[in-house]
Image (cartoon, helix red, strand yellow):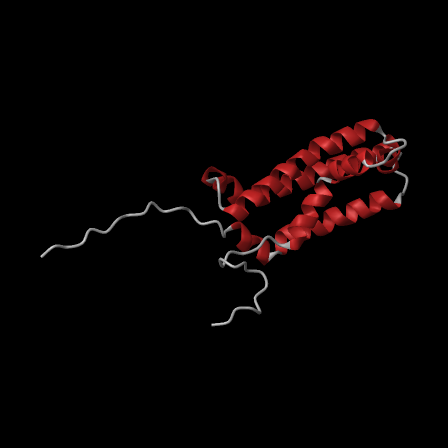
Length: 165
């Protein structure tokens, strides 16, 4: 049978992580992405950070909240290798971790709105829109649900003894 038209399975028949999961994790860890990008600037390294996070406390909270997304990314990498097995129970409940990170990001968005005195800004509106669509994705995505159930429990191998006549 030819299954080449099914692009969401890898060579071993396991479900690949959805691309939007990677995009969601990058969005949740955007504080870390901005921090790493600021390290590449030769001049004022804090200028890039100030563009996205005018308040230093907002940036530090984004780094703290983004640490959860980095940890979830490491669990996704461990799933691709199917080891270590002790991460399997964590992987099965990854959706709850994503919900928690989205709620923390919503609280941080509220704090950034408060620091901006609730004035409209495009970056805050875009953050709110991405949070909304990410929540819808977590609720509706069948592929994400299938992916989170794809790491099966390892059954102990039982050797069958040959019956001797």
